[in-house]
Image 1 (cartoon, rainbow over the protein chains, first blue to last red):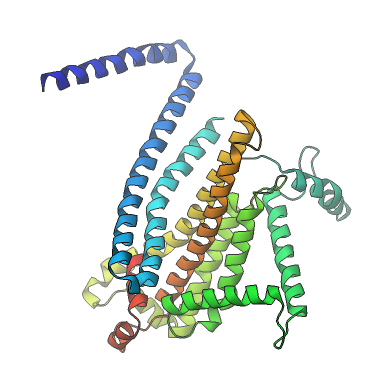
Image 2: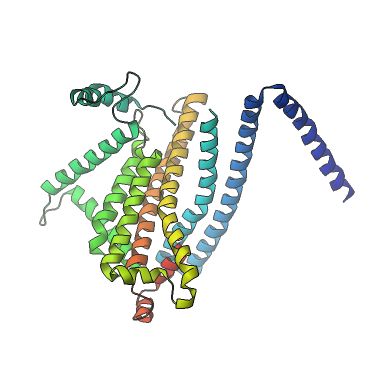
Length: 109
Length: 264
């Protein structure tokens, strides 16, 4: 517990130290450039988060589908349809993140 | 986002710009008469038309050619899928669905050829397909049930929940073309972006090859999913009402009602 607390404190301090010159510069006048950098960083992180969540969810769905097919090969056709539909719906969430990122990036550029 | 493809620029310079000027339209100096993705969509449409006429000329019952065999296998696969998702009367929906499948697949794959871009990597093209599907399934539902009965379908099974379910259903129906177009656009645009940036920033045509193979796979899957969702929406629109004959329908065709509830 103590080590975790220290780790979190150090991380927060690191972020603050890193963020301070950013805000200072933003006040100094390079506001557009600064927000551009933040946009790039957040774009990368949000796409990574979305991809991670999407990958985990799709792996769960595929696991269940494979299990279902191996237990009952007669239901393959039905399960295939549901699997594709479900994968499409799961993937759509990550794609929305991608589209939002692209909109922001192109608006910035 | 506004990258120009060589073929599109070439066709515009040689064909469409002079044509537009001859017809009296003003084309600015740095611009072209027809946007790139529309040139590509026109190419796809022309290719499909030519292919269809070429196949029709060689149709033969006694000695089918190889291409006819391929088309028949494709048609049978699509119709089998439709029978599983929609139900009995599938023949009426085959033209739209097969056209959409071929158009989207060819549009996705066109981006693999150097000099071309995918028409489906632009939101306008995918949205046009999705709006087409939206109007079509609503039209089929109205044609099957009549306007009032189709609208009653939106209100849910019990009358005292109608005030809640009606807006929810309207919103979910309006979200369908949005999600259809966004899904196709996002997939194909992401794939083009990855291939383009690999070619541009790392090394041309070496590292992008595996991604291209992946893109070929994704193109097929995306065309399939678009068509599958179209079928699910149609089946939701033309299925029998909740009052009469629903139990038999559910019994006779378990996939249909299940897919409908999954898509809602």
